[in-house]
Every structure is written in C-alpha cells, then in structure tokens.
Image (cartoon, rainbow, N blue to C red; front, side):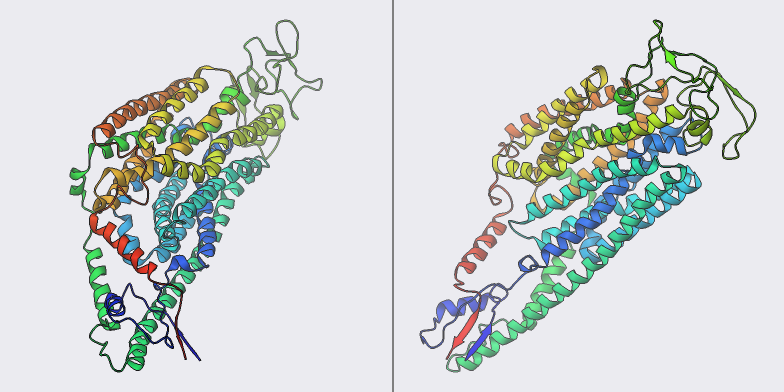
Length: 621
C-alpha cells in the first residue's frame, strides 16, 4: 500500500538536518520531499487575475468619463463661465486625498488583508461614481466634485491593494506578467470609455446622465467581482493553512511510527513552535511603520526620480483630461475662416427656425464654405428670439450679439433642434472622432506595457529612458501647439513614450533606496505624483480662461513640463553614473538588490528545493 504526504521542510529546518544526518538506507522505505504549496501554485490564481481585471476596468472606465465627455458635459450643464475650472476640479479633487493616503494606505492592507481591502475600496469607488452620476442628473457641480473626492479615496488605494494581492498570488516569475496583464486590461477600460461615452451622450439630453450611470453599473459589477475575490482568497488561504498543519502533524507521526529506534522528536519542530515562530515574524513585520522621517535617508537619485515623475506624468494625464477639447479646437471642429459668412447673418442656420430657403455660408468669391467637415459651421452674427415657441426650450428668450460657440448650448433643444442644428450635429460627430483619437496613447500603452517592461528588465537603461521620454514629449507637444498636421502621429509617439516611462520608472524606485524603505519610497513618490495631478489641471484651467482657447498656450504649458523633465533626466543620468550606474544596469534575479541575508535565504531555499526529487512523500511496502 501507499501512504502519501507532503513535508514542509521550509517550516521544519530541523527535519532537513535530520534527514541529511540520518539517511534512510532501507530501500523498502523511499522518502521524497517538497516544499509546501503557496497561493502562486494554485490554478485559481488565473481566476483571481480575471476578477481583479474586472475591478480595475470599472475604476479606470469611470475615472476617464469626464475627459471623454468634455464638450458634451459643457453642453449639458447650465451655462457657466467657470466651466473649465469646475471640470478640472473633477480631476484635482480625485488626486488631493491621494497626496496623503499612499503614505499610509499600505498599512491598511497589511493590517486587514488585501482581499477584504479590494472589496472595501471597490465599494468606495462605486459609491463615489454613484454620487457623481446623481450630481450630473441634478446639474450640480458641488455634488459631482464631492463624488469625485469619494471616488479618489478608493481609486488609488484599489490599485495599491490589487498590486499587493497579485504579488502574493503570482509570486515569482509570473508576477511581472500578471501585473502587465492587469495594467493592459485596465487601460483598455479607459479606451472603451472613450469609444462608448461620447456615443451614448450624443443621443439626447438624458444620455449624458446615462453615460455616467454606465460607470455606476460597471463599478457595481466590480464590487461583485471584489466579493468573489475575497471569498476565493480567504478559502484558498484557509485550505493551505489546514494543509500545512496536517502535514506537520503527519510528519511527526510518520517518523515516530516508522523509526522507533531513533528518537527524532528532539529534531522535529512541532506545529505549536512553528506557530510561535510565525507569530514572532508577523509581530516584527507589524513593527515596521511608515515614518516621514525616513525620507531624510533617501538618496538624491530617488528625489530626481520624483521630480521626473511629477513633470513627465504632467505631460500625459492632465493632457488626457482636456485632450478632447484640444483636438476639437485644433483638428476636428476648428473655427471657420473669417471671410466665411451666412446669407442671412442674423437668422438661424438649420432647424425649425431657419429660413425656408436655407441659410448657406459662402466666402468672398461666393464659394461654399467651410471647405470640409473639420471646420465648425458658421454661426449667426446675432439673434433676437423673444418668444418661447417650444416648451422644451430652456429659456424664454434668446437675445445675443454676437453669437459665439461658447453661447451655443447643444443640450438646449432651441440650439440643437430649432436654430443651429447643423452646428450641434457636426459637433457631436466631431467629439466622437476626437474621442477615438485621444484613445491612441492608452491603447498603445495597454499593449506595449508588458513587453516593454520585459525589455527594461533585460537591458536596463532606466535613467536613459527617463531622459529620452520627456524629449519625445517635448516634440509631441510642440507639434500639437504650432503645427497643423494630423494629431495621429504625435499621439502614437505619446503612447509609446508613456509606455516606456511607466515600464522604467516604477521598477527604478527600489534601486535608489535601502530595501527596508521600499514601501515608504513608493508611498512618497505616489504622493508627489498626485500632488502634480491635483495642481496641474487647475493650472490648465487658469491658462484656458485667459484666452478661452487651448492652442497654443495650454500646449506650451505641457512643453514646459517636458523641458523640466529633460533637465531632471540629465541630472538623473549624471548622478546615476556617479553612484555606480545602478539605474542603467541590468539586474538579474535581484543580484544588485537586497541585503546579504535575503540573498542567503534565497540560496538556502533553492538548495532545499533541489533536494526534493518528487512532489510527494511515499512509503512503499
């Protein structure tokens, strides 16, 4: 007969010593050993990856809804001269809580467990998005901004705890792959939003609200996925714990029964002592707390990385917030030529109030203009409608001189159906084209992030990447500011550079500080990043309000960010060269990281695993 069992020799070092000192010579009893299983050995890990991707997709989709609906939201909300300020506040208030939370958020997951935190933070994101949607329905900026603040409390922490969970479930060589997949799929959530939200919002007035409620629905599904994640994680952990306890007891029982002539009990570490030792290790981990004073020990390399992070990400995420407006103004809904005038300048252009014979626009030579659909239709010079002919109109009279695009509110049926129908219809079409174009960088990032991360691991050059990327961003935003070409090529390079930078920046952090400060360092750089993401949108709004246009002044701001990024990249490379080239070097299996104790522990674990010829302990009789 057979008796099959597993020995956890990692938790029983005395047993390993015993087996090496007292080899079994009786061929009727064959002993084989393996380490106990971990979460990363379970096939359930792929289900965990699938579920957390659902959670992240809901969060990323909802985060970018305002960016995709920049123009539609302007049309839907009540006329507001401070629209850009209110709009950019939706992103600033998301980042404000996360200036502080990353410094302490890791301790929350360590104290309560990653899986329950995934469920909690997914629920917070859901509540935040629900409040935002209610605020949109009520056309109240204050409620929307409150909802985004709540959303921010959960959004960033959700990313942190999911990263921690994946590192536990995919420990070892699959970790980078799993994190790359989760990042790619979550970024596709942003792309999906850019395609869906404008199409939904352009249906009717109520569809703008529906576009935000789609985010609510997706985050409700994320909460359900978070619940399943918690259930699977807890169940798997409990199963492995019971398995380990059973194996420890069976080990002692087996050796006592089969080797009565040798007293092995002095060599074996009992389950009770194992638990005591594990509790001591856990208590030591609990003693490690985030202290702001630790920042004084961080190297100059780390602080240069922080400067690079805040300005380089400032060229990407704040740009994406207003990319729809920039692309409409620059490419897809440009102002018509000055010599293009209406046949009846003071009358409506299209709709129920337009002249029966139409109201075409022509240039000085009598040719129809604008020449293509990339230009906005010409608006009336003035209007004087003093009678409310339709109960759906939002105002009792419409008296304007002049009529500008800022005045035209396509959320009001007067403009969209009665007076400037052609303008609103073409604007809706242009916003969808702009949304597809602004999806290019994140689409590229979704597919390039995993392989680029592998290339950085293989070839190093992290500091060099931190210099090259802002140079690319400088060229991209100079082109967007002053050239008249298609935006596709600049946005493609923006996506490639963004992918390179993300792949190089975050793995660089542990290389610049002592290993024991890693968690604190990640918290500090994330806080600094969110400081920039809170301030930069407000700067963009202030610049826009000076001239009521994005081109070129807002793009010049992004050019200045890229310039600072280049300077920080130069200093980063010089400092890296002075300190041994740790960032540009290739790091294989942590050869240039960690303490000597950590390296010895890895070597010890590898030696133990090599002693295990099979996955079972079998006694053959």
